[in-house]
Length: 287
Image (cartoon, rainbow, N blue to C red):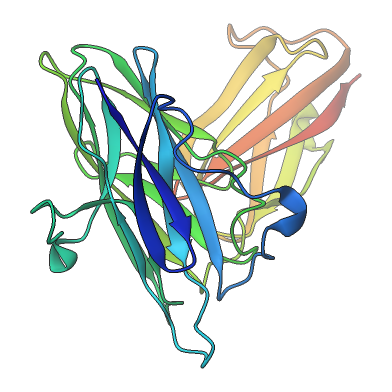
């Protein structure tokens, strides 16, 4: 059995045959890596399934040439040898001449003027197994103000890649192919924030909770003990606007009993339509 490795040197792609499938190229030392900018960045995708790992996959923006013109770097995915798990970026307009396929392990493009989408597939021949897609060292690899959203085109699930590190799904009875995409938006929305969460006494012995959302989101509010034990679920997945919010707690637990005097926590979590999440906690004193 032979494994195929890639080496990228300058603008030439060299094929080599070796014995270590976990190292498809020599990694650049940290102190020699080019700084991340909007004109040059690349992020890694890693797929694992049944002890098999495919880590040689990168998407991003290629550095411009000496005249400042944008460049494109495409490296074909290697042949698949069972058992396998494989990530391939799909570029039908750049169909491979040598292999008759449109799958690529590297998909680096010129710096985009607006929103861009990288389409890719995760394939495996391992049946009924958990497949994990991860993006290691992501925040250090991409421009700070860009928004990155992973979209599962088959299930409709979305993950905000800045606040999550991986996405998991199950393969089918014969393995199969999962269609996914990464949406990259240079004109990103402001981050989802819960601002100014605080409690104050209200009429009739209630506790009034006030906060603001920086963006539209669905929110969930819980009352917890100081040890984190659930006391009361005030609301779950309620749609709220980007505005000031007010929530009331009548100082009763989930069974309708008044809680003993002491200190409690109010935990509010919010989820935007991109999958971005945020969390805030404040204390409440019950007398």
